Amino acid sequence: MLAREEVLLVVNPRAGGGWAKRIDWQRVCASFDAPCRVVWSQSAQDALLHASQFCLSGGRVLVVAGGDGSVHAVLPALMHTSTALALLPLGTSNVLARELGYPLGRMALRGCLQALQAGAVRQMDVGVVNGRPFALMASTGFDAHVLPRVPEGLKKRWGVFAFIWTGLRELRRYQPTRYLLTIDGGVQETEAVLLVASNTSRYGWFTVIAPSARIDDGLLDLVWFPAGAHWRRKIWWVLRDVLRGRAEQCAYLRFARAQSLLVEASSVQPVQCDGELVGETPMAVHIVPSALRVIAASPPALSRNAV
Image 1 (tube, rainbow, N blue to C red):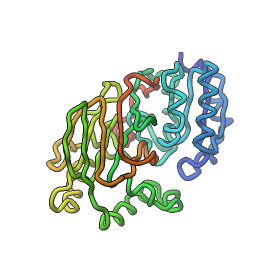
Image 2: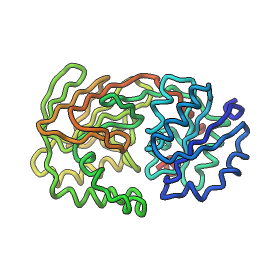
Image 3: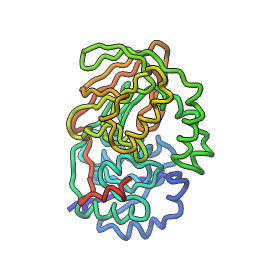
Image 4: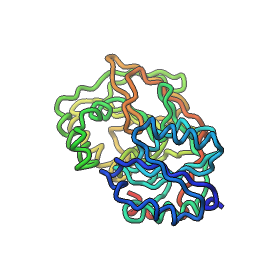
């Protein structure tokens, strides 16, 4: 049924280090068992405009050919509409694609086509941070500090490894901050290295920071790393457990679940969501249940192909 619906492909030409430019999109369209149109987004605003026009016209299936940043750009247009989002993952981390079971790499196109033909339509929650919607997570602390310091040229050449290299460089100079957290009305204070409000179990690349998180449970999974003594040493144990999918067993992480969160910092801190800087603290986050229609891969890719 999905395969017969009109399909709009919104292509990010910069995704995957320019991989999108090397694809024969005319041949891709011929592979779809449906009317298909391809548009190139030269910016996030351009992608949002194309998506908005398609949704307002009653378009049924929008395929984002790009990464998580490309999905983030079109979210405002897709929320609370009947348009379903499908993915052709061409980005650096492809966290949402992993979460929805899409295969990556050479199997990405075939996986997208299979999802359109036999995938399951699901209602997905969407988070909102300071008025801006996100699919994956919002955070403040070390990751938001590192994000703007990743050289663009390095990111294009090395992909996710550019973030790792920059993080290692910044680790020596970063100083944690004291936060006042209001979690569903309850208040607590903490000094933290990192604080994440997650809608998905995965955080980035193949890290699983909130193993119990679900995209359709109407809740945010909150994870923070308190800045105790020798926190720079402890961060390696945190990373080990997150990489193994054992974050909830990590002695140095704290967890909570909530519908809303307010983060106030003792000094102004950057805030990011879905890998995009979106302002500064205070960080007000809440969840909007079932706000987005998505097409999940069916059957989902094996875990070794989805990470």
